Amino acid sequence: MRLHQIALSLLRPIGMVVTGLACMFLFLALSGYAAGPSFSALWVGATGLQFSPFQFDAFHAAQSLAYVTPLLFTGLAISLAFRAGLFNIGAPGQMTFGAFFCAVAAAALPGINGAVHIALALAAGCAAGGVWGWLSGVLKTRYGVHEVLSTIMLNYIAADLTTYLASHNFKDPSYQAPQTRAIASSTHLHSIAAGSSLNAGFYLAIFFLALVTWAVRNTSFGFQIRAVGQNEEAARASGMPVDRVVMASMSLSGGLAGIAGAVLVLGQQHCFVAGIAGNYGFDGIAVALLGGASGTGILLSALFFGALAHGAEYMQIITNVPNSIALIVQAMVILLAGVRTWRKKRVRLAGQSNKSNSDKNDGAYSTQISSGEEVG
Image 1 (tube, rainbow, N blue to C red):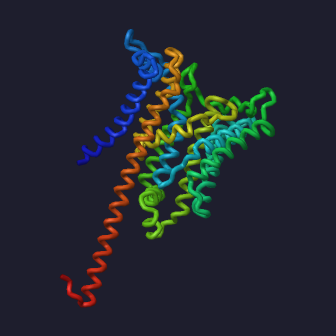
Image 2: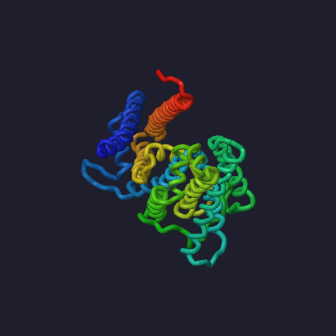
Image 3: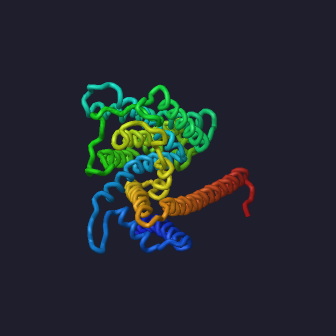
């Protein structure tokens, strides 16, 4: 039975990916592009591997991993909220806020030891993203505002507010674009592969992935998160502080997204630039849906989508196929994962309804027995 469950857990996401790639192949063919060369370029850009003749381009592999790094953080952030029964669509805003405050902290306090300065800058990014996520938790628990609505609105507020600040109070006068001053060189994250964007932030992402996965499975607070996510009313009836768990979960989720923005500042941009979050926040939704609640699943999902993103860029350079066509794969994954989640929720609600009806029948039977009525 255990092997059967493991096989199903592996086959479902593989089936989603294959379906998405098949749809992409179909759209390429219908659009008049040569699907074979396009997929070949996509593969080379994603993995760096070429078979005829065989060679390995470390730059492409490193660039794919550079895309993976922020996706690990945003995918983990959204997955953590999922575990608590919350849908955090605010990762772009939390990531933007984290990036801005990280850039401000990294540009300030000159002369501090590099490692300490990096830690302070990361902490600033994490705290800023955490506060932005916490606001959604407060709006949900205190005023009944659904987290989807509040996080979407806060995304726009974060983008506009940081753009204004980067255009006025914290603007680098050397550039016309809205961006902050360059951070101190002592806060730059160490490059892993020369010439690429891959840096030590990748190791940091792996560390947080392992830490959060362990904490959710093995700590009392992790148990509360899972309990609230499974059945909020049952958790409340058992005495769990549901509201506090919701606010803390949104804050932790936002903090992880904030670190994603901080890593982009410290490892790649070296300043805050308007629009720094790009598509990483929303792409994290696809990572979380495909990866599920498993840390290994999140890692594999982020590797796939990161490689797909860089592979699509290389495909566009080589074959002139628009890299946006890769979004078809993401769309199919989100669609199929959404259908699967809806079916699971429907089955769970049906089970709860049957149990409720059974309890009512048992109660009626007991009442008849206690009153001495004949039960035919």
